[in-house]
Length: 135
Image 1 (cartoon, one colour):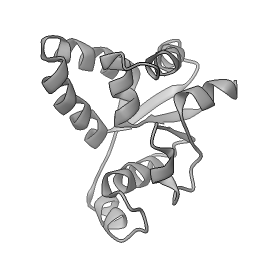
Image 2: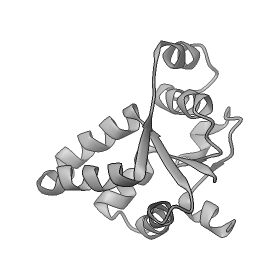
Image 3: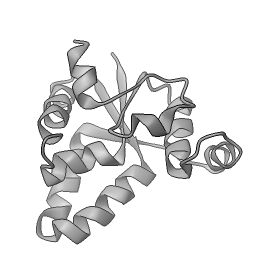
């Protein structure tokens, strides 16, 4: 089964219903709820999502996070992940952390809207919409 890594922006598209990106992201997470794919994210992405939900959807924040957590497993970010990110050619430190965490966890595809920030990735990087078109 394919292992998908959900970046923070995609999780926010789902929880904040950000148009026009939410529908492909919701369709993709629904496939994960149906056990067609395994969904993963890092603790960093989960905390980032919480931060923005607290600002823009505080009343439903915990419910949204619990719903996401029921479909998405959390992968480890450790010292090695941080060290690799610090010494990488990624221009965005957070995306470097996401990549190295995903790489260590054996992720097959990174799902993000910031594909340009993952130029250094050796893992395929697609938007939710692009991934759905491959099915």
